[in-house]
Amino acid sequence: MGPGSPNGDDSWKHAFTQNSDYSPGNVSMSSNHDLDEILDPSPDSTGSVSYESSPAFDDQGSHSEADLDIPMCQRCTCEKCKKIQEQTVASLFPRPDLINILDKYWEILKVHGLFADQSRDPFQWSNAINSPVHVQRREYHLILRKLETDDDLQQWRRFVAEYQTLEGYSEFHRQATKQRINGTQARGSGENDNNKAHKEYVKHIFPDGHPETLLAAPAALKKDLQFARRWAIWVEGYVEKNDGLVPGLGVGVGLLVGMEIKKRIYSTADYDHAYLKSLLKHIHKERSDIVSMCRILEPVAESLVRNHQLSSHDDWDIIPKELGQYL
Image (cartoon, rainbow, N blue to C red; front, side):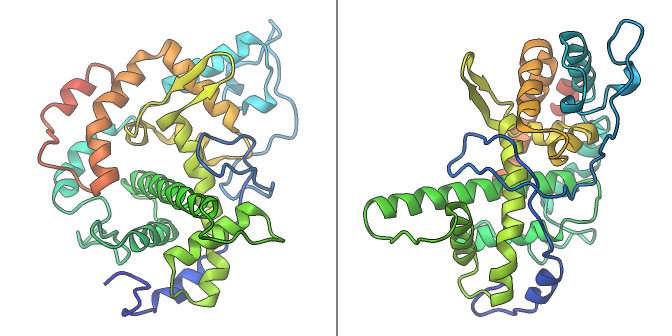
């Protein structure tokens, strides 16, 4: 029985409230989802590095290669430095152990699914695909509170849960907006619209929620949406004023990226939306191999995002051969 079920055990609430000290980071630009947010700045909780001094220049007046990982906002903005940095980061894009991890966990993902623990039993908060919508959305929220152990599959689990949280929240907001337009739902007053929307969504996923949960969950949701919108830039693309649509890489990008790229998703203070968009443009312009790998991984990623496990149509014999052309 799912956590927080009206007829179930509510012991999960205590564990949740003890681990709910989440604070929002800083997002400098919004993505193309409904109810885009400009979040209030606060100390980054992802462990990102702050640089106190300007990086050194080499004899030609550009930054040395030792400084390539310094965030763009604190680097020289000349075209030479920007080009070197984009090329270096793009070369680190694929997860180096990708084929080995897929090989190791293929049968597990096919039989037991993505959200299973080391005993192969589903997590206590494992999402039930056939549950009511609000239960599915609640369990993605709870899964993200428990994904603190960094094992081989943690990154994929977090990507799926965050992206599904964004989809669920966006759909909920669309429906709520439609109801307000039709006059079936009253608009409150005196509080920031984004904060009200978060609270409404929390009440939706916790219809019988404990007061402590209803108080703590909006801040955690705000953080989840912040990261999910950053993923959405690479998954869905974005519209640029001068160049029009910059296409996304699809959900396959969530499986492809390695630790260096993951750091750029979650280090919100060092890498803003403009940086993520710039890197996406560079990939489309210079790295067709990355685009191709995302396309190869798309069916597998779709299975994990939509059903949490691989389907009978996902063929392991094809994947390593096709990825091997690029890795």
